[in-house]
Length: 371
Image 1 (cartoon, helix red, strand yellow):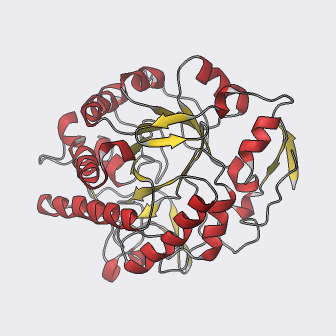
Image 2 (spheres, rainbow, N blue to C red; image 1 turned 45 degrees about the horizontal axis):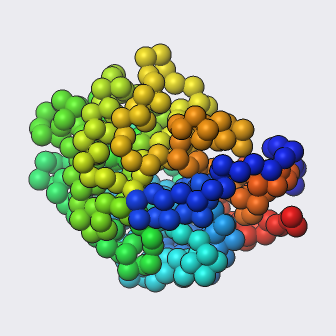
Image 3 (cartoon, one colour; image 1 turned 180 degrees about the vertical axis):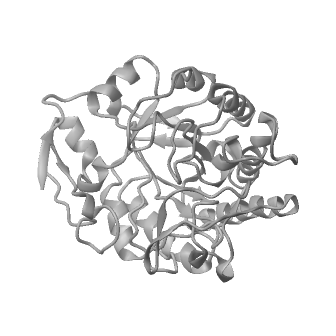
């Protein structure tokens, strides 16, 4: 395992408590959602996953790996679900372990939309999307990597059923003992596909104008708030991330996401979780886009995400531009990341082959240090 020194002295601000809605956090370090592809085909967590999350419970908040709200929502094999009783029981193992270790964890609710394969869908049907526009790329299936399948456009009368899938998953997350939920409206998955005019060519009440394209994200968020209460619901947005099929950004990022954020404000959500730049790629943004200006429109707590190191996190905290910072890949090889950052210790770096699939190796076998 290779190491890199992040800094050589302790820091303070990042380690101060913060409250996000009803979530009182011991520090401002958030574990970002990390897909690890270590579930069975039934999407049921087990004791191995409970150990993995509990090891990282020193984070102020853990956001679970993206969790499918239904079989229709699946886009990748070996990812977890939160719609069956068995999945609820499996996640209860995880939440109990995190709570026993003194941590807090929310469930990220996920529907991939068009970025899926027929073998992952109910009865081998086509993936659903706002419009029948094919995504680029391949996805992981039970038989290996396969090109994503051509989606079909959702009928208007089906969209209420999508909202109900989120409601059911939110109810299941309560039963599973999570501390809250995060609506995944990012990374070019279903809700983000509705937001962007590059993937939404509809002519009904869910397409065309910005008000129409943001309608589904707002309906889903309000419905989830009805289950949980606004102070235990966050939302993730990624205005310029082209992931999940190299989806182009919206033709007017500032107007679309600015309107959405302003419409979210009356809900008084626990937090806004923003991908600053392109997820896991860079912090660069297109000309004419000012993510800090969008962030400033949000009235509540803000979690910054993407390519953060300790100096950047501290600088943006000091400038009042973030309330908490989500770290992703550093948590893979450093279950004790909070302590390592606090004490300026070296960070282990996980090889890419450890990211996805397999068992305990590269998952729960990373050592912790003495501080």
